[in-house]
Amino acid sequence: MSAPIRRRSWLRRWSAYLALAGAAAALTASIAAALQVRRVVVEGAAGAVLHQVEEILTATVGSPTLGVRAEELRAAVLREVAWVADAAVSVSLDGVVHCAVTLRRPVAVLADGQRPLIIDDGGRILGEPLPGVPLPALELVAFAAYPDERAAVLAALPALEAAWGDRVRSVKRLGPRDVAISFAATPLTVVADPSRPAGLADGRAVLAAWERSSPAPVRRLDVRVPGRVAVLPAPVEGGA
Image 1 (cartoon, helix red, strand yellow):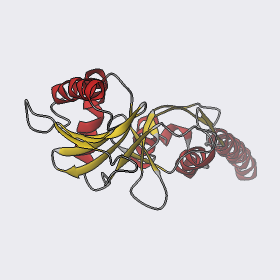
Image 2 (spheres, one colour):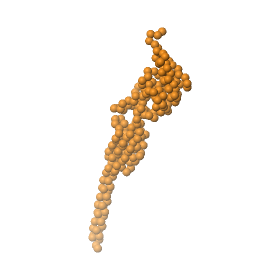
Image 3 (cartoon, rainbow, N blue to C red):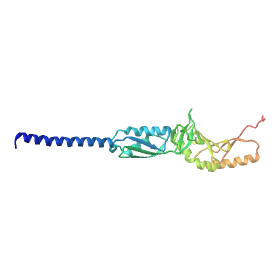
Image 4 (cartoon, rainbow, N blue to C red):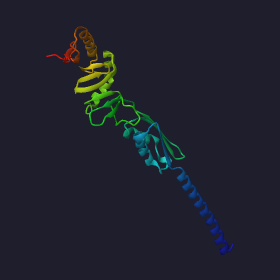
């Protein structure tokens, strides 16, 4: 075979190789583009919470889907968005990050500052009220700096309400073990140790006996000392 013929054959082979390599590169680029995160879908949240979750997830847009870890995104959402109790995150090969959010249950309003803050049943501060979500009926006062005491009071709430027989409307912190409790249907304040709900049952019995024997209404009961109930009557109109 002559040299010119061998040269042409070599050129044809290399041209074919280059064409195949170019096609493979183009296919790889197309697959890479197709396997990028393109969209974020969040369910179960609205307003500020929705925006916070979306902000975390949209940081993955443009990243290869195979390199995005759903468990890492879930951990980031739970860490950075207080309102979120749980998040189910998935990343599909067609480029969609999907997040189904479960919100924490608001149980009380923390009324220590100019703006109320919402807390959940564990005493965790969730943030400002969400639009369209009714404010909880329970109010905690002076507990902002005491997360453990917040949690303890909320945990004791069912026993306190059962002992008194009425729903608690507000709890104000007076000291490490002292609170002033206001009930929904009782126009007085009960000073108590929240770890001793039995004291409220004693106070309720004393209040009933007082109301049977005295015309003076009661302003406050103090049931902090076991076995004793201190009664502070309200001033009587027209009295000296």
